[in-house]
Image (cartoon, rainbow, N blue to C red; front, side, top):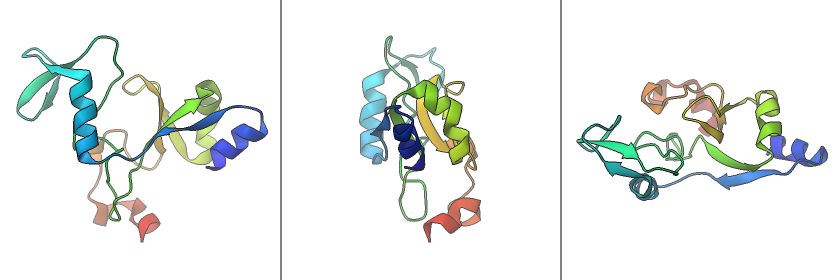
Length: 134
């Protein structure tokens, strides 16, 4: 919110286009953007998948920070809309990192303290962000 307020002060449009998702919503999003492909590079649900042409990436269910990942069920990522160039240049001032070089998702932001891949996320009871959600 601080980043969006600062952007607004500078005349830059910036907002949240999407935030938390249930696992069912993540599943639906993933299935709408991928198809089963024996040569695919994404493995989920016992099959290999490839992203459909012209669609944005979507993580397989269970591997997105948009899904509830904290002890209190909060998501740790949002997708921004607006002046993404301003966001990229300034998100570090707000403790956030963006994903233009990770999965080619320049709209995705999350706290810098967590690893970029959820598979590297430490269990909530051992994670430094646990204190945020008590």
